[in-house]
Structures are given as structure tokens and as C-alpha cells.
Image (cartoon, rainbow, N blue to C red):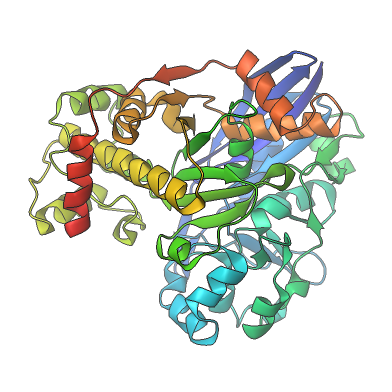
Length: 477
């Protein structure tokens, strides 16, 4: 048995998990969990990255002696370093407003169709590319740009690198070659020399610095292993699918990422129009998916309501009328924090639907809307990629929401297999175990997950006619 610390950072919390892996065993336990609370300052919305790093150190201390450390986090955001390696200000939050209107400026130089054909990345206003254009005045002061998990790995080890699966979310990677798109960067005046050399999942990323060992109480040397550092890449690696199984996946949490695992990107104009993205995964795979706003909608409502008990909310939602009101869960109008119950009510009122009034009714509107968005994403992905799915795997925090899982099965008309909940941490651990020879390829790791992790199956109930009607109703608006 070997022990691996998986640092898994989400948009609202971070955790350090300890995975113990043996020849036919995989156990995961939480060592430490901490809040990830962005801070609004006069210049905008920022990540409190020092608090995150302190949480990581506390977590490594709580984890005890481990054989390796791996870090995954959300995508697109970064820190800038000066010539001495010092951080130039707090990293900007992807929900900051600085990228408003930037995409149109980029498309004036590189039309949206050409950008997609070269990078395969869906349009999102916070893509790293648009952030860099918005930050052009600050970039001359920087000598290095590190994506968030690479920044934390640098502080732990003193070594710099850019992990590939996360780099693929910058809109500066060619998904066919899995290398930088120098043409796109050149046309937009972006210096790719800002980025550290690319690393692959499984590559060594250095060892913990003596100061880190002293602070955490660990005995060195403790290697840091490059994992699929985009948390979705790690989560998809932990989808417990069989080798030849035809499956779709939904990684649920603050966001829902719904799509297929492919062997090559889909770069058609139809795919761009449908706003699908081609992000890179393990073992040469492509994560072909659509970003959906996800449980962020419910998280913001719960915050606005004063943190009521979630179980009670879900019971009330289950009693509320089905598909009475639905909203577009991918509408940018829901991207920013604040006033979420009011904004959902306003969207329903503007579209002539009944306005949900109680927390239970609003929660049901959110879950119905998410299931409807899951249905459309899974169907669109199959059509655009020419690859069918017989089952939908739901991984991540949403697996705890039985109502959402059942509604997703009903909406898709396909069985849903829910689990594992801590998919990103498990995928992180599996890559570390692979680097130490305890696990084979992606198929082997998934086989181990199937044998060791609890899974729940939801069969679709009823037909999909009401969901088709709701989808049509939403499309008209």
C-alpha cells in the first residue's frame, strides 16, 4: 500500500484527500477541508491564493507521511510572477467583469470560426485567452504565467511547469497536436514564452522544499507528481466505465460538464455553434463537452436564503410540480454572484412562465433546468461526434443529490450511474499511483474504481415527452 495526497481545489472549497492504493484496493479519506472564498476589492474580484496555499499546507500536515502529492483545481485562472519568482498581485477570479466585450475584440483579429478550428475551445467570456487580452497592460511586468495548480506546485517545490490538460483550457492549445497554437498566439500578440514548459500527467514536478517539509512535518524527499491538474480531467479519469462501454459523463459541482470521451477533437462549425469544447484528457483522450452553469445556481440561492438545510429543500423540491418553470442553465445572466433567487424569478417572469415563489419551488426549477440542460448536452454531443451512449455516468458533488440524478435519468431517457463523489481526488490519486507503477492505464484505473467505490444506478422513469416539450418551450424563448 502507498499513500498519496490529492490536493483538490474547487471554486468554493479546497480539500486535501489521502488515497491509499494497493494491488486491488483503493481507499480515500479526507485529511482537511477549507473554504475558498473570493474577495471583492476596489479593482475587482480576486482569489485569496495565500489562504488557499495555507489550506494546502495545513492539509499536508494533517495528511501525515505520504509517498507523493498531486494538485488539481479549476481551470483558466493564473498568477503572474516577476523575474525573481514573486507573485504580482492576487490572481483575478474568472467571474470578474474585466473580460466583458473582449471576445469581440479578439474576433476582429481572429474570427470566431478560425479560433475554434484552431483550438477547439468553446466560447466562454473567462477563457484564459480573453483574460490575457484584458490584462495586456500588466503582462510586460511579468516574466512567468502559472495556471493555478502549477502556481501552488511551484510554491511547494520551486519548480515551474504547465500541465497539459489545464493548458488546453487556455484557448492557446491545438487539440490535434496537443501543443501550443503559435499561430493564434502570434496573431493576437500573446507571448507564449510567459508559460513554463508543458508537462504531461504522470511527469515529476519536483520535491517538497525543505521549508515546506519543516512546516508540514513531513520527512523528505516527498515528490510532487503532475496529475490531470484541471479538476475535470481528473474527474473524467475517475469515471468508472468499462473498457468497451459506450458512455456519456456529467461532472457535477459548481459547474456541470456534460459530454463524451473521444479519441480526436470535433472541430466542425456545427460543433462551434453548439458551444462544445475540446479539452484534453489522459492517455490521448479528448473531453468533448459543454459547460453548464451547474449547482452554482442552487449554491447561490442557498447562500441568499441564509444557508437552510439542504435536505429539507430537496424534499420540498420533490413535492413541487415537475417542469412547471425552467430556465436556460447556461445563460450568462446567471454567471455573476448575488441575487440568484430574484434573477431566476425574473427569467421565469420574462418568459411568461409561472414564477416560483418558495425556496422549494425555486430549487425544483433549478434541478429541472439542470436536468434539461444535461439532456440537451448529452444528445447534442452524440449527434455532433457521431458516437452513441448507452449510459450516463454522473460523478462529483452532484452524486449526493438523488433528485438531480433521477431527473437526469428521466430527461436523458438513459440509465444514470452515480459515483464516485470525490471523482477529481480519485482521478488525482490514480495518476500518482500510475507514476509509481501500482496502476496501469486508464482502463485499469477505472476497473479498480468499479471494484472499490460505491455506485448508485438510476433507471429512467416514464417517457421523455414532457422533457421534449419543456425543451421546445425553452427553445422558443
